[in-house]
Length: 102
Image 1 (cartoon, rainbow, N blue to C red):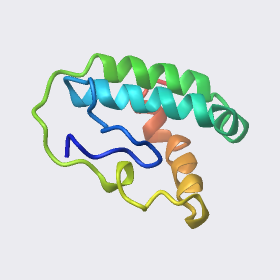
Image 2: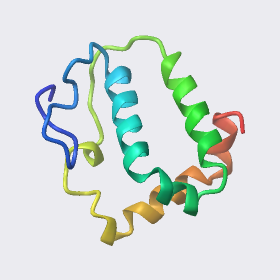
Image 3: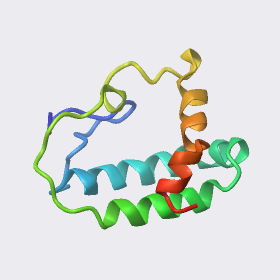
């Protein structure tokens, strides 16, 4: 799994990352650089959510590798199948906002 690339990327997800959280933070940065404008347009308060999520991920304790959801690597993130809308809906959930302290 360390050799698999995230969707739309050519280098391995864990390239140059010693921990999963570091690799995930890198992916989130790249995705925000690429899709941030669209997210900001559809999700009020995106920048605040993004900042809090980064803070939370940076403070997670180390955990050994386990299983990763297929959305990072599979063809399950095709924007035409409603996945984008589902993601926005998840980020708007009250329990998610509560977990982020928003």
